[in-house]
Structures are given as C-alpha cells and as structure tokens.
Image (tube, rainbow, N blue to C red; front, top):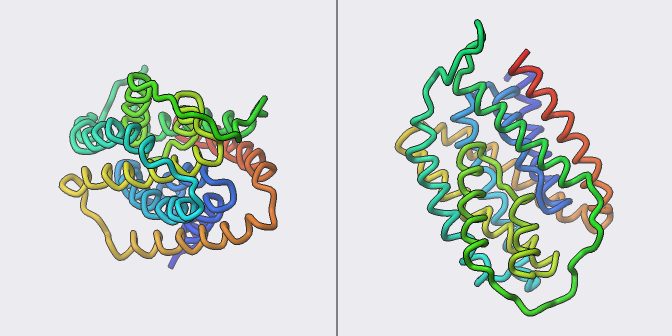
Length: 265
C-alpha cells in the first residue's frame, strides 16, 4: 500500500470525525481525498463520495432522530425535488459532459478539470458559510410555515449541485430550513442530515449503470468514515463545535485555493 493511499484512508477517518464534531462539512473533503490521495478520476470520485456521505450521514440523522431533532414532514417536502434532481443529474447529465468542454488558447478544459474547478467554487462558498459569524441563531421552537415553491426550488438546486460535485450540501440546506421552514437551528441540522443521507444514496443509484464500482474499496473507506463519525459524536461532548467549525472553514478555504491552483496552473 502506497503512502498516499494510507493518507487517503486516514482522510476517510477525518471526514467522519468532522461530520460528528460539527454536524456537516466533512463531506466536502471526500472528493479531494479520493482524487488526489487515492487517485480516482473526478466522476468516479463524486459517485463514491455520494455513497460515503449518504451512509455516514444516516448515523448522524439516526442520532438526532432519537433526540427528537428531525422534522420528517419538512425533510419530505424538501427532499422529493432534491431526490429527482440528484438522480437525473447523475443518471443523465454527468454522463453527457463532454471529455473536452472547451479550449482557451492552448489550454484544454476537460470534464475532469471542469468538475474539480466547480467543486472548488462550492468549497469556497462552504468555507465562507462556516467562517462568517451568525448574527443570531434560531434556537427557539416556532410554528413551521412552509414556503412550498421556494423549498421546492431550493431542493432542485441542491440536488443538481450534489449530483455534480458529490458533496452533501448541508451548508445550503440548513439556511434554507431555518429561513423557509422556520425550523430551530438544532432541528435544521438533524433534518439536513436525513435529507443529505437520502438524496446522496439516491444520487448514487443513478451511477450504478454508468460507473464500475469497486465495492471492496468503497465499503472499507465508508466503514472507516463511520468509525470517524462515532468518534466525532463522542468527542463533541468535550470539544466546542463552533470553534472547530470556523477553523475547518479556513482549512476548506485553503483546500479550495489549492484545487484551483492545481487544476488551472
């Protein structure tokens, strides 16, 4: 086993650990780990990421469900358009991306470069979301008012993004649940994990006919990530998630800059 591969498996543990500690964000690391450390091409990496993110998020969602921090009705309203969008994106849109997207002078933008650059832009947005201070936190229980059209549109957008980059999109889902469904923050996080788990696994189903899956590797990687989230959930009792979230935001920002530099220069 090569050194980069060992670091890749260590990365799987970190993905789960971060998810357990701060309730999101860890999935944004899965694709870079699979591409740069394990050596997969970006399209395969995004497919594998959907499976890892989906299975690992189920653990977090179940933990929150037992605490009464998952709103099933809101999850269903948000998830149905997201399910459809992520499945169609993986089944039809991603395979349609041409091998060479376009050429700038002598520089060819391939589908691999396009996906990684697009992923880096999503990472930048996620990092800003984690770094910025929240002016107020909606922690009080309120009457839930559904803005059906906006929730459906948000679900479609998140589904398409998830389908292309293979990340959970919690940094987009949580604000939508707080602002559009008026969920308290803790319940928004729990509900988000359920949505992420379901739509990621459905998106992965869209890949089964397009990509050859190395199940032995994928299951080992996912198991390590699950072990990480169990450790993270335990460690969250002793470590401040808010401070970690900001620090991880800066780390994600540096990773995004690195990916842009590596792919473009």
